[in-house]
Length: 212
View 1 (cartoon, helix red, strand yellow):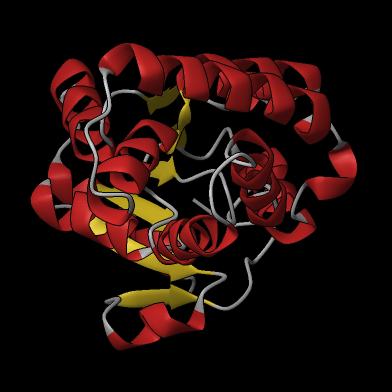
View 2 (spheres, one colour):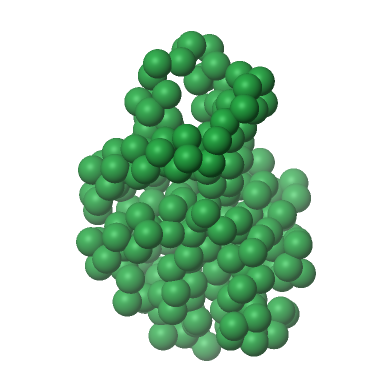
């Protein structure tokens, strides 16, 4: 039986689940922070890879406050995030980066489920990318930072009044798992084998067509 047959609402992470964008986002941090010591940037990249579900806003603050041990203003964070977004929009509007397995499932089953994107990436940027690649019509809403993922999920549950036992979040990071746990919904790991040890479900590969 397909794991997802038990649910009516699918909440999708984006990076690493719908698009293979993590290496490009890593490059974005390198470019934006190129004036800083390489070893400090490498430390941020390690944090970024482990915490894919956290926003760039959080990661830039982490870089200054935790790695460099210095204060950073909100204006500085916003300026860095804006530079980062410009780089991303130039690189991510590429259908070759889409993960065929998950995207094929989405296109084949969007009428069988209510689908939403909940991502740590910038919300405006996400909507532009999905519009450009023709994916927006498959999702009820597309949601991203600066609102934290836990809140994005909570907002969807409240606005649409979905029964929690009918909702599952599909993600590839510990932050996705934590957002699901916080909101008392199910979680399915995907595209990250380390999640097999904590996920109640793990999707090795999507079954393209689900009978509902």
